[in-house]
Image 1: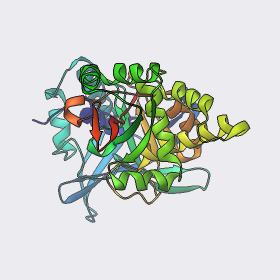
Image 2: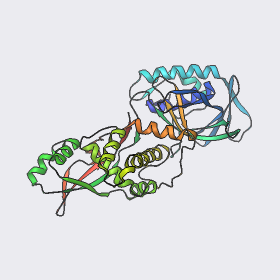
Image 3: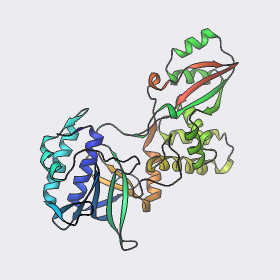
Image 4: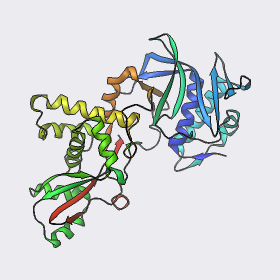
Amino acid sequence: MLSGNRGEWSEIYTFFKLLADGKLHAANADLSLNPTSYYPIVKIIRQQKSFTFEYVLDDTNVSISKGDENAVLRTIGRDELASAAADLLSAISQAKATFEVPAVGTILNQCEITSLKEPHSDKGDISLVAHDSKVNQDKNFAFSIKSQLGSASTLLNASGATNFKFGIAGKLSDTEIETLNSLGPKDLLRDLTHRGFVIKLAEIYNEQFEANLKMIDSLMPKIVAEIMLAYYSGRGTSLSELVDKVIADDVLDYGKSAAETYTHKVKTLLTDVALGMTPSKPWSGNYDATGGYIIVKDDGEIVCFHAYNREEFRDYLLRSTKMETASRGRHNFGHIYREGSELRIDLNLQIRFI
């Protein structure tokens, strides 16, 4: 019996639901389903261990074959998959931590699913062939899946690679440092900024993350640093709020074009993170999730942002994400320390969906 968390089971739910429905609807910027825009699904491709399985749809059934073999292993009714999706949605909605779903055990075996997650290292969580009416061709797409079932998922996970070092202009005694370090990171930064200390980016610890940010935009490290300072000093939480603060400060001196420029650059950052960029791996600018993003809504409805919905997707990411304070002890940040004669503080970057 397979066991997993809500996010892992949500990928299987998506698999069942798409096979049952036979189409993937586009989303509007507010995440509502667009009833007139959808992609008919021809088949879903799923890898299990060293084998690749294809699930080909017709009007009523799904035929399962393995690898290059032409023979059909078995056929499952799409109504059975719809029932399994409903059972799984009910289980995910009620469960906590990791759990099993006995009600779908048989159909998991029939579908040759031996693990909840496919053995991939990129951000393509599901691969499918859909009919693209714009070019009148069947095309292969990889989609990243984000689920709203349960707690909100992260867009950019905290790690040692997402720590930034900041310099503090001013003087503090050892006693003052000890007192400040007893505060949480946000209270500490709020205290420093209230007292007029100037805090600026000194360096990004992870050279690869810095290179990836510069691949997006040469000034992106400074923009991200300003967003982090606005967040930790208590000036906002959502990315849209924080971008407004960065626009108002305009430390990069964009002038009259500040609003459009900062907004565009942050949307590009969020999009690149969503579709392929991770802090510690070299980023070429090419998207792993070539199809786009699938969202499993909290009511079980599934919608997507395709490459054709680029602007809606960018708007959605900006309005739907927030900064978050990760575990201070685990990632070793939020403490003032001395580096020679200079005062420093490390801050951590984590972005979560609202």
